Image (cartoon, rainbow, N blue to C red; front, side, top):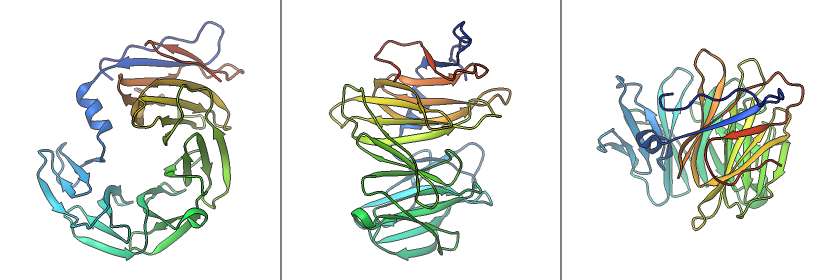
Length: 308
């Protein structure tokens, strides 16, 4: 990626190294940290993009292409189906969900009490719409197929205020959490990871947000997670779990807003990109050959950091 410095090699002792490289790309940071999803405009093509907001869908100039006509609380998210078509899931006033095509036509609607909506990545890597319903101990994630039929229901822990689909340790799982708590549950609702964030100068409040990252294409994925302070405390923490669920790195940084993965050149695997107050930071694992998988960080910026 232009502007990033090359990651150094391992530390001389043969141990794996996470390399963090700092760079500020104002236009890229704006695109990945925008509070509503950005989507490629697949049907109109030629590199244009559209922006999904609670109002509906807008083009790259901010012109509203179509409106959800939502009442009260609303959210609109993009979903690319198995045929590559772009659709948009919206909910209205906590009691109705709609699936729209790229032209705004409502493909189906389901009336139900809904907390929020999102995209569930199933075990076969198919992306499906989900809605979270229920209250406290009865909360569940309901997955729908392309016709609006209920395809799957996954119970959600009462303590999990934030829920997202995660392909770790494999697709079909959920990253859940709230405050200092982080967990991963499988497609049947069984807990496969639970962790309590410790050692930060702030109390985690927002999050978690995370990605599964394959630093090498032939290896199992790691889990990279961020959690954030309240709106009055601009700090975040980045955590990295190995494929077995062991925490191998934790770093406190200025507030982050987005975490994504990006491919390395030459089909060598992926890197983690995080965007926030300090611009865009890249993390990569540079040596996987050592038998000891402890992780050392080679940081290219000032700021608190440390390992558990």
